Image (cartoon, rainbow, N blue to C red):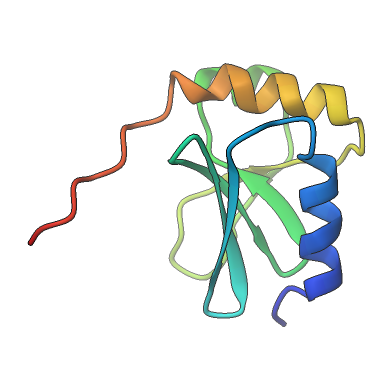
Length: 102
């Protein structure tokens, strides 16, 4: 089951306090970037973020986004302030984007 456009728009509304958020559609699902760093995604209408020290402190529900993928943590709150703090704390713990080969 692919994520609905309505759910993706709803997640973007929860992320609205943050600037520089990018939502990229990928094979029926969505990848989420903050200041060009991939921090999570929307998979089967579930809002998931990468596991980092900060996200592990703030979240507990581990989920597999799709078969063969690494586990991620599910955000089960609608609290925009909590989500903003989470993403901002995760930012420095995330890897820099890989340079594209020419």
